[in-house]
Picture 1 (cartoon, helix red, strand yellow):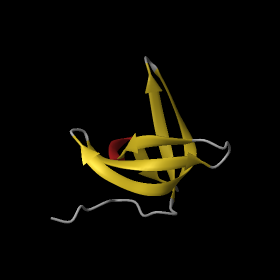
Picture 2 (cartoon, rainbow, N blue to C red):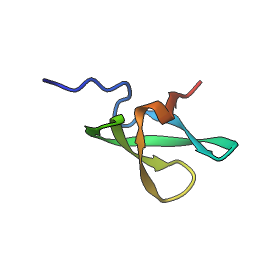
Picture 3 (cartoon, rainbow, N blue to C red):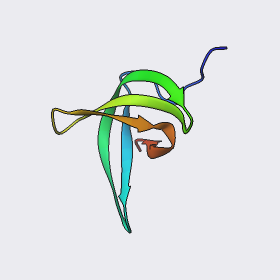
Amino acid sequence: MAQIYRFEVGETVLFTERRDDVSWKAEYTIVAQMEPDDLGQRYQIMSTNRAHTRTAHEHELSARD
């Protein structure tokens, strides 16, 4: 069965990171749609400000306004 992803490769999104009682958002670009795991859909994202990538779950991402 085909996976349904909310975000497309090349789309700029907001990634929300939470640690303890602090959270912040930063812009990232979707570079790949990855296989889901137990927590759901996963993406490889690249920072728009720094040269690094990371993996994020769909629930950690939101559309950019």
